[in-house]
Length: 263
Picture 1: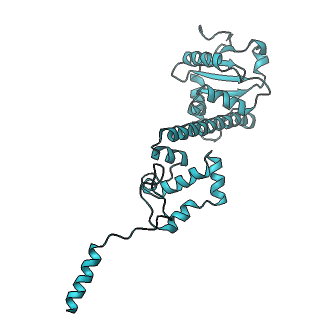
Picture 2: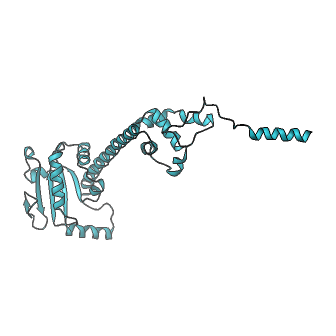
Picture 3: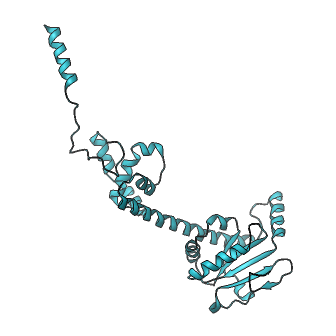
């Protein structure tokens, strides 16, 4: 009899419906939450609670506090395993199913990326200026092999093409920049140096380069240089009211031409 009662109790337990977590503590999964539903109310509360530092980070990424909660939920799920360290905007965008929200995240991403590239270009302008001022054209590292390669590169360069522009010249200068850059060819025999009038800030130069979609890597490789005016406007008889202007310096002969189309 006791064995029968025990078997009945076990049977009732196995056939009973699964216990469901209190729905007041767990929000239904939506298109922006992590793929899995968190059943522990303490986990949900921890994810939904934002510290002051997290609120500050949300602002830095141009996101709302609600966005940051969604980001925390996403990275607490499979996405955090698939893509550890994924930036918040991308994490939100790739997990979003609502077209309007996905579009909003894409626009935020582009604004952040544009600002990043602008700042990198602005810093590269300052770095090149500092290199010229501090080192005067000398290599940063006193390495004989590096110096030999540097000298060989300098000797291979036959022309310097100089483009003088205003920082607010975008459409016209964008087309001209493309034509001038194409004229320099693929090799390292010609470099394009862009000069801006005295008083132009690094931020303005960075914004100009970003507007023209100039690749920061092209600038870092010094195929294109972005420069403050350090006497070049005067040296090459550049009249600011007539910008943009182009000059081509033959490094071998020292001759300067006013056009880039015929060398």
